[in-house]
Image 1 (cartoon, rainbow, N blue to C red):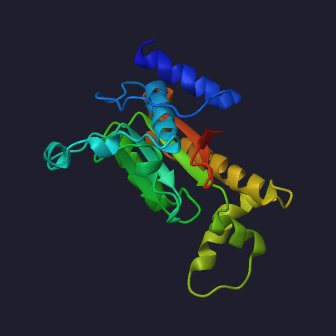
Image 2: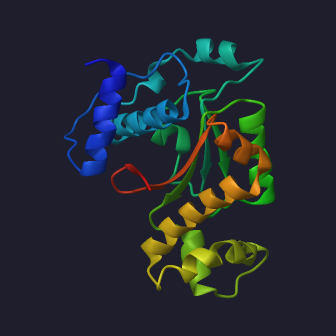
Length: 219
């Protein structure tokens, strides 16, 4: 089976709960050319990470630096949470210059985050955007409690309220809904991203990262 077939079979197996461990997949040498291929590489990289078989760290650091000093060509952009337990590049087994990462507590599509992702789409030509929520997200749990907090922490709450309203008080459901709603916001509120979607130049999806297993599930 060639590498593309392996990734497709593996990703299907993960979705159906049929993947056995350990899995060793080869880190790609060429950037994915389509949105589907970009998401397949993210899935394959996460499988390597979760199986404790990363390949990106074996790449020569000097070569990576030389290749990215003057330019960058990431194949995907990630909107992740600022949580220290979600090291995005490690989670997807990607190295320097391969992912364009934006992070903010609650993985929220704020105007500043949207502007950054528009740059990734319009200027850098990324093929995929993934909004990555995670289990036990503190921002979502704090928003559900709505306790009085110091400083500007509570400014996160309004962005997360729509997800909480769909959760029926279930934290896990609220976290997943928040990731999905932020992806919807990216698809609809940005003319740059919306146009790229219409031209099938990019894909926008959401996912959940399990802190215990290291697995990412696309939702």
